[in-house]
Image 1 (cartoon, one colour):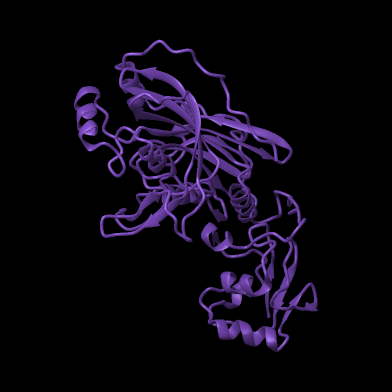
Image 2 (tube, helix red, strand yellow):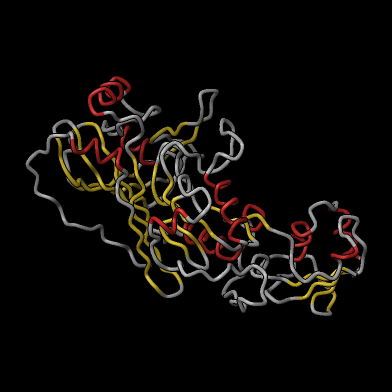
Length: 376
């Protein structure tokens, strides 16, 4: 008999899906057979394939799996789960995951004195790869990371093995002794810098995935655009259609196509400069390349944008101001978490501040300081 106790990383997951994730080396036919023959019991009761598991459930499997050693058959802890494996499961309606006791429950990150506050430079240096991984804040459920421009959010074609934010987080998690692979809940383009949320548990990842899908995580950006906008505040509401080619993926704006996706970008001008505007942007939707495609479509492409931008202007600002990257930075995240409103800010990195210092400001009456945050 094989025994497994469900921890928070596998809570709110169907029984059949749990079996596939917990024993990835076994074939699907094996799982179908043990369920059909009533050889799987949950808390002593015969399990059903679509049964939703909850934290603390004890799953007994009256079958010998080839991938499970004798020593591991009665183990109560689950194998290390990657967030990619845990993410697709969706919590049942109204279900609230219970928080386990930190001493006994697998899937609970270690208590640390740095939880819930910004880290000092010395504390950052104590972590693995501090020069690559900049933790803005760390809690028991998630971390907020400041991603530099040029670093891919996750592995993919054209990215060297081990050279992505996700892989850096995995290494950090191993050194921290976590039993779940930290995983980002959303992405930034490789050229974009700034704030990303990474979940430290499966249930946390599912919560953030749902929150982002329901647009209750507010994401703000700074961008420097070509020219001066006619309005100091506005909204770009144009659908986006993804196209793929040998040169890479690109979003087409305002296409009358059934596959086009709704995309809404709010902006306000922070400062007019001679020939440029610094804008603060709030995304209502989070499509690929949304900000870059939207501003290019209204004749104000982002500086340093090698896909949608003004290439001649890019060469000029590189020579004049030393801008060697896309001028787009994720500067703020806002969301409600466990009854508290969270706000995380991240100022422009030095290379972008250095560009701003070289621009000539124009006389400008600043609009209202903040976007209106919609309460849902």
